[in-house]
Image 1 (cartoon, helix red, strand yellow):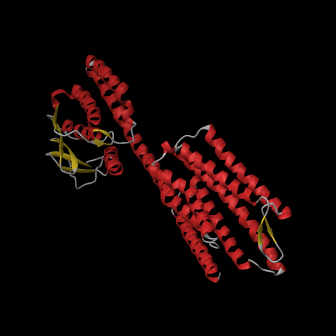
Image 2: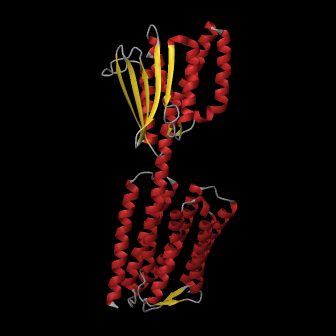
Image 3: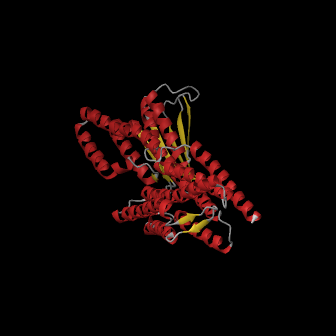
Length: 428
């Protein structure tokens, strides 16, 4: 008995320490305002006192002291109550996580609300037990006895867990296999603990250990997934801001060129308007695409821009395409701003114009895009004085790094020209 007593206390102490450390990790990891994280924190904060209560029950058990008997009654009441509250919290957590991953139906919400209602009914019976001994009785010697409806308390808890399991199974297709297994551990581990508890009499802390393991699994599998998703959303939001800075510039710059053509060559301007409108009608969606797009689509953006500029500058602007490799992806509006800089700040600033060369190649590990112009160039050692030009370059560089781990390097010499090299890892 002494060995079992020590084993139960040791397991509870260990579980409490684990939960306290886990709670510290969650509270210091950020994203505390997220609903799912808030529920997870409350689960841990409910489980810790539940284990403390169970530990105190071991200490006051079989106490024939009147005060100890009163304390024991309070402890058993808290143990049953906190257990039911924990079931409600797990139900809310599972429903919130599924809603986080995929839309839920009215039937799913109804099943979850039914599970919570079952727990509330259980709580009502726990309260009534304090007067009529429905679930359990604590005699004057501090000995626990099963009440006439004790089995009902176990059935109601099992019904709640099975309803939650049904919700998880119903949304199996909306989650990865590991997520499904993580959520189902909520059902499997407590059942295993009950089996162990019945096989090895006196190991009453096994259920607390099972719940602690479930919380650990939820943290390792579910909470990390949530935090990754949040970080992904934050990254996409930053990309959207960067992309929003460059989208209007691309469109407005094209319209400005068309306006200038209206004064210089109305017929060509009309043809350009048709060309640009057809392009927008078919490709505007790619301009708002936050994920990398095929290089061919990005090249079309650039070709439209260059076609418009070619109409404006004529023989002053020459374009050469050496596209030897195109089977890769990159962020939208990556190539076009680089080419635009080569046109606006390079060859067209030269008296007789010049040539812009767009070249692609591949190495064993990377796709490489090189944009070269023989324009006026600039001193790459000095800061770029043109603010909008700097923003455009930094925008492209940041999106390359954030979205695909790519790089942008620019080298230039005054009077000779500029070379921009975009390097993108393969396999995106």
